[in-house]
Image 1 (spheres, helix red, strand yellow):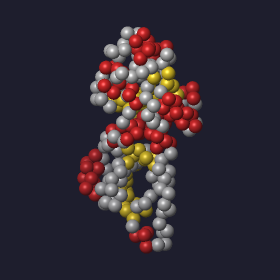
Image 2 (tube, rainbow, N blue to C red):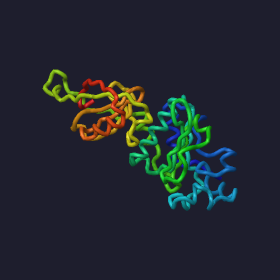
Image 3 (cartoon, rainbow, N blue to C red):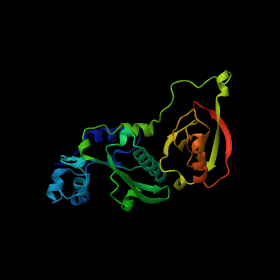
Image 4 (cartoon, rainbow, N blue to C red):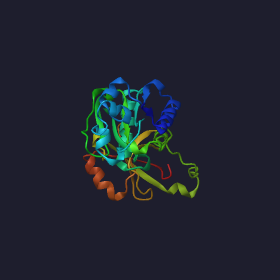
Length: 258
């Protein structure tokens, strides 16, 4: 009988602790999943429907073989359209950046924009950038079958509990206040952001799009209009300016440690 990967159960419990209804977070597939296959079911179900060696969740990489009866996918619902979009886009950005806590992720399917649509990320580059319409109402994450039991919670902790510096900011009355960077803010659409950018939280608690480079280099550049972002080195300015089509910039400052 297919059972949930214990590591996914831990991730599910964490998501529930963050206020997502348990009924909106699924691991083991329902009857519809059991008839079609995929990562929401284990070897026993795949064998029963004649897909143990032919299902896409088994044949496209050695990382999915031999596998077990563990279901290796997580569905996350119970969020607004914008929240699902933000979660999906952040997860995909982390996968593209190759962060250590995403290396066991095979695919992500979810909301393409706040207004709707479906996008897919495939770590193997095989599957199309699309998915069924029901993914507008939930984010689906498939994990390579050989990652059973491996941590799958840390990634969500990073999303819901962004890093906050434990070192206090410099006293503005001290000499360090001279260590300030101009922050140049562009206006840009989400679709115009460089693919490598991720999402994080900056000063003031606002969730923004950004690229993390050497904090001691150059000027900080951000994109605003609901997509904010990035610390870029001076050498990246030309690319950024080109990326945003020469949009007019507004400059202000914030402490370099923010």
